[in-house]
Image (cartoon, rainbow, N blue to C red; front, side, top):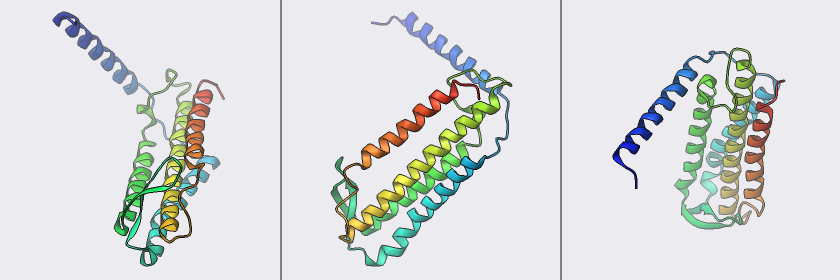
Length: 189
């Protein structure tokens, strides 16, 4: 199907393209992006969600039964159960994601962008991209906090699951943020 020479040519072209992209990223300006009011709101919401993600299992741990929901189906109903120690998995992953996305936001000059980055548009594009990551972090950690809360409420018998519309709302939020960013990144503000 592929000759030895066509594969070698493909690999050389791929190597050249990779080198070109990494050299372009090295030439991008490294800027400190100051947080605006909306950025502070997103950071504070994320912090609240992290506190809830960790605090709720601490508060309710003694009241929970030995078996708690560990997975929910697409309808939001629990379809797998685990020991109550498994309730700590979600806060752990959520905290790691919050920290990781916060750290990632410190290097916007290494992100991929839908437009070329130069000295004229770097600050504007970096601000939009870091806001995208910040908004996604807030939604993801908020979703984890909600799942953790509803897992606890389901285990205690106060709820029957996440609710029918959880996945739809989560998908709309995530894709809405991405589409909004793609729209805004092409505009000059």
